[in-house]
Image (cartoon, rainbow, N blue to C red; front, side):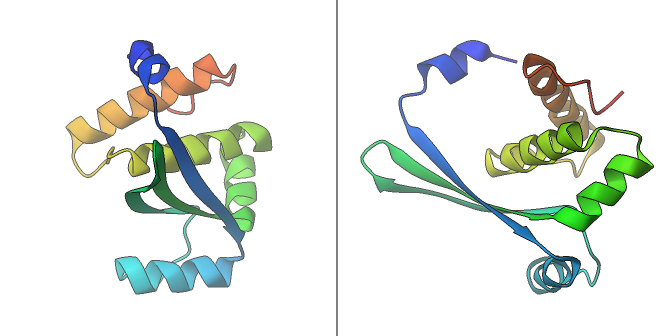
Length: 125
C-alpha cells in the first residue's frame, strides 16, 4: 500500500458509523441493495466537501450481533473482526469493491496490509 498517499493527504475525512440491530440492517439492505437479508456492514458513499478541506466520505452501518456471530464462527477476536469490518467498509467509501476477482484481490490485499499496520492478523489468508 502506498503509505506516502496517506501522509500527504491534506483533507480531513469524516465517516459516520452507526451500530444497529439485525432488523434495521436487514431493512436497509432491502431498501438500498434489494436484498432481504441481514449483513455485517453496509457502506453508503457520500464523498462531499462539507467545509474547506473537510470531506464527508460516507456512512458505515454495522450490525453488532452479526459481527459477534462471525467472530466466533471464523475464530477471530471480536476486536480484530470489528477492525476488519470498519476497514472493509472504509475501503468501499474510498472506491474499492469486490465484484470481480481482480477487485476482490486488490481490496483483500489492502485490508491485509492495513490490519498488519494496526497489529492485527490478516483477515484474508
